[in-house]
Picture 1 (cartoon, one colour):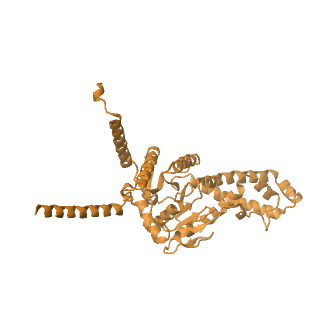
Picture 2: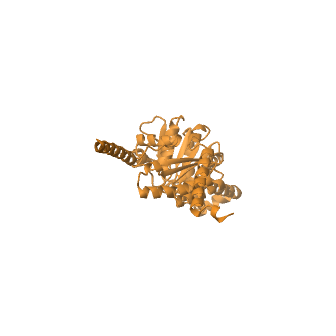
Picture 3: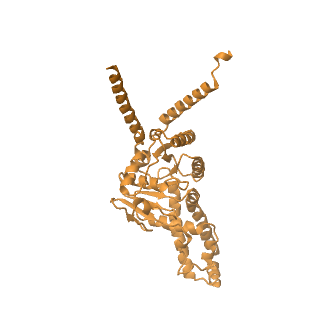
Length: 373
């Protein structure tokens, strides 16, 4: 090829940018709808987990999703399993470990639970002393898992049509999702040991200062929890009943954490096909700000990567707002963008600029006419 006919490096760069823009546009058109409408439409869903890295807007997203679900479901419960509870802040209403009706709703309830070991009192009496209690506590993670099972047992008896989990940051969430498996294995070990050793277990319990009645009560309680956990475990792995909504922001660490979360969920056989990207800056809102322009460019780079990695996911872009989303009305308003793609209004600065330019044109035209006269 003649060197004079070869496109310049700058021209190649422009062609590359245009090509990527066309590819991105085509990918967004071909991708599943960018809303959580699919979650509302899937009436078989019972358990909906909302999770991601810390500080990406999980609570706002889970509350907004619960608000939308309350419009299509008979009864909805939102549970916070994050030790730093934010449901009370989001709804501007105090919640406890017992389901409380959210102000302004007749079918949306909220509760805040701490999956902490001290909540799991499985032995008889005030102290968890006794042979079985010691044996139980030696299984890693069993205390938290039993506490989680108690919550599940409580929730199962309440018969809500949908339960939304506002989870702790990713690491805690992954441990939470392991609880059913940890508990099932731990209880199986203890129960099989009990059946193998029979009367010898009671003798050992007495020798170690335990009460046989307390041990029997503990075994009964464990068996009950095991039944609940087995049921929940099956449901968690059923995509008809359970899904996980990943929440993130368009930045590197959040993208990395989301990929890790998606991979781990696949290992746990838990369905996930929705990603909510919060704090998105839209070009229409930039005006003439260089800072906003740079941030939009940076965000777009990561948004492109999300579309590349998760082409078969519903990717919902939520705007960065000027104010916090707090209170029922603010959540209702924000939640609409989960089901109807957000369309940014023109930047006020741009409208002012246009108005000033139009006024300037009128003044210049008047001056020209005056000069001609």
